[in-house]
Image (spheres, rainbow, N blue to C red):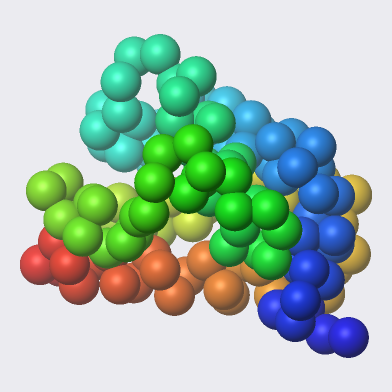
Length: 132
């Protein structure tokens, strides 16, 4: 099987434990790198819920349990972000944080490449929804 089929991506990410490590590293970068200052400011001071929401979202998005839906209901990613001032710089900062977080994970190189390419798709849709 290839990434994106069934639960192959979820398994490649290390299931919920691996996804949680990725998400924690992602938000750690968001809090520390200068490029992410603007997107960090779009979040609440306490990132606990944001961390959980992203981990739960990625679980289902990668073919695992649909934990976001179970806990928070359905979500349409672009409209959920359309109230935010997101432009090209914010998209690239988000992807930079994710790339740095992925680089720390024990994922196969092919999966890292696949995942960042897949994450760019909703990021670009969010940019469009925000008028960027």
